[in-house]
Image (tube, rainbow, N blue to C red; front, side, top):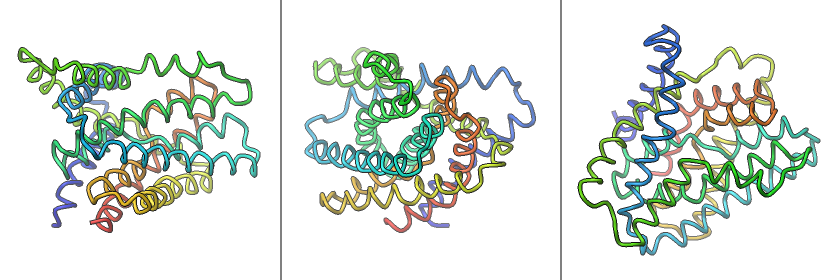
Length: 301
């Protein structure tokens, strides 16, 4: 078995395990919402905070990687706006399509980066998340609210309350202040962080809804191809244009090749979007990514 498959198959095995556990009602339906909240508000922020608090923020790779992230995301957003003008999608549908094309499964992304590149890759990935998470959240809220209008407060409030963004800010402040993680706090955060990715992948599997794949076949397939094929090709073109080194190019393409985030379903329901379409997009992209990610990363390597 190739090193790439050895790194990836345990991640998808955890996703499948989460789906099977929920289908068998173990350890009970009430477990999964609590597990998702624990991971989202405690364990995953601990991982981001610890990664950024000790990251070398003077790394010369950061400015060019930040430029690449924002350029690829901006080009993708402009393409989606042009499609909306052409197709006349209402905000409820456009919001689901935008999230399917631009949002990404953070748990799967960091688990893949950790398996392939270790601590060095996780540090760069955490810095990418510090840019991607707020930008994608703003675009998602705007897309879902475009027809009824959205205030600056309505755009920024979800970002200000986002625990992942707060963790990134906290880690950067600890780093820049020179405090770091003293007094054994690095060990504490490391223990919390170690539980985050396995639990997150189990929750991804538990959130799959195969019954939501019916009735929207062409739209689901088109959105999945856009996310899993066109967006990584766009990111690859940006990486080549900016002459990024190999690891940075792989990280950029990887984060634009990940399936969309399961949390997109929650935001879609909260803002009155097409939740049936969103659930189908999440499920189909996650299933297809088991094939597309190994092929894409193998091609890059």
